[in-house]
Image (cartoon, rainbow, N blue to C red; front, top):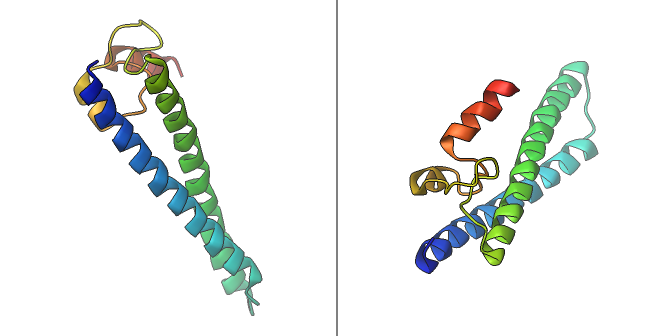
Length: 116
């Protein structure tokens, strides 16, 4: 992969990382605010718990993506970015544009998903 392409993906990954960290901070602030509210009835408690569970799930998913982004950034710095971890072929440029932290090419991703 050319240096210009690596820089392109690095910028995308860094931008996404910044956005996720901002999202996680915002959700954590909102969860802390919900926890500090004095809720008056069971309906309020149910709504707060439902929102809390949804937001916790979002934080969990985004934390996972953050880890994948860190792995991809490490691969860029070690010259290993864009190589499928299963077959060791190059991951297509279009696939990386859609999911810049992808670790599998399209074919191997399908194999992994079918085996789950």
